[in-house]
Structure formats: structure tokens, C-alpha cells
Image (cartoon, rainbow, N blue to C red; front, side):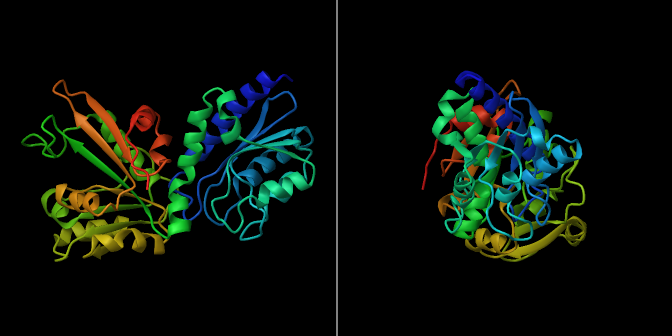
Length: 348
């Protein structure tokens, strides 16, 4: 197979692995979402797998099982993984050993394990057994859509890195504004965004592990904040809902409703929110609140990325993304990919 063919097949397989991992974003915490694709010697995809939930098999194990169930294990020649295979035993066996039990010759890895104690261990174990390890980051410009694929793989694990390295949850702010830059919908309406933007909002809720709002927002809007316009993850445990309020005064009927859907907590200090969420196992939280809380988050640099939905006079919308890090999970949303690439990065 020529180098060009290898790169074409690697790109196709990375697309498949990422697509499978994206299906479970929001379901895997405190683990990151991961995808894997297994190819034969001709570059045909034999199986794809993803990590579904903490404590269940990893992406590689699910893909390997799919091959085994169909008698395809002996045909495995290449593995594509969005995250370096683990080389340690936790609640599940090491994925490196699972791959070594097959005839796989080449393993493409998008991102190294972010845990400094184990980073490189999986790749080293595979190489020690004579398998070829190739890195998407090093060869991205040879692969069709390589930089975008890498950006998406990095987006899959960005909140996990924030959580595991800094013990803080990733905060994504979602802000909709009108032509005047105000967060005020027309009289008689609770929103001024389109169905497209509303669908995006509910997909963001599905993808995140918690919602952060403000007491003032609750009193003014009585927001539902749950996933309604699309199906949520099956069997999902209640997400955390943080209400930032020094008085803790919210309507009792709203609180009763919220407690049936969420694990509701109150916080009188916005500074404590990222760490408090992380302690509860939250990787990624969506902030849906008014200008006061958003102003505090910006002023204290507590946000990680900022999605702004600007409604034009013709009722169409412009998406823009600010980010404080090189990677962002917003890159996983196709309609935001352009905004992420064009967005201002204020890396810290």
C-alpha cells in the first residue's frame, strides 16, 4: 500500500473513531470519551468502538470484541485510537495488552495520555513488542483533514485534562445576544434564537456533565435546563445543577421540579464552582446564565471557552468562539468547527 493510501485510510478511520466517540460525550465522566477503529491490511474498517461509561470496557476492548464476535480478529492489521491505549490495570484490563493479543502491526494514536505518571506507557509497551506506533500530531498534514481530526481528538479529552491535571471542571459559557449585544429577547418570548441554535443548546446539554446558572436567572425565567429536543444518554444518572446565589432564594416549585431532574447544589462563591464540580466527578459544565454571572466569570477568568450566538436583523445567527486553551470540546460540533478555527485564542 502506498503512503498516500495509508494516509487516506488513516484519515477515514480517524473520522469513524471520532464519530463513535462523540456519541458518548457526556456519558463517560470521570473518564474521557475515546474512539477506536480497527482496519485490515487493505485499509477496510473491520470494527469501531467507543468507551461508553466509566467502569465499562474501553474503546479498544469494544472494537476488539466486535471483531472477535464476527471472526475477524486474525485480519486486524491497523488500529486507530483517539487516545493512547492504557497500559495499567484499573477497573478494566490494559488496552495495550488487548491489542498485543492480535496480529495488529501499526497503531495510530491521536493524543498521548495526559496523565504525566503514565503518558507514553501504552505506546512504549506496543513498540517494545515490535509494533509500529504512529502519531497523528506528527503526520497530520499528510492526512486529509488531519489538522481538523487532531483538533477534534484534542477536544474529546480537553475537559479531562483540566479535571485530571488541575482538579477543575471545564466551563463552557453559552451566550445569546441580539444586534445590540444585549441578552434580552423580544417582549413575550423567552428566547430569540432559532431552532438550529436551540437544537445546538440541547446537544450541548447532552454533552456536558453539569449546568451552572444563577439565582437571578432562575427567578426571572424558571429555566428547565434539561435535555428535551434530542434524546439524552440512556441510563444517565442525574446531572449536577449549580445555582450561584448568595441568598439561595428561588421559587419552591421550580426547585422541586429541578430536584427531580438534577442533583441541585447552591454556591455563594463563583470562585469555588470549577473545583467543586471537579470534586463531584464533573469534567465539563455548561454555563447558562445572565450578564451578572457571566461578567463575574469573565472578570475572574473562570471560563474555558465562550460560545456567543449573535442574532442578526434577518434573524440568522453568527456563532463565535473564544477559547483560553489550544483545545476546546466545542470543536466536536460540526457547525462550530469554523468558529473554533477562526476564534480568538487567549491561551493560559
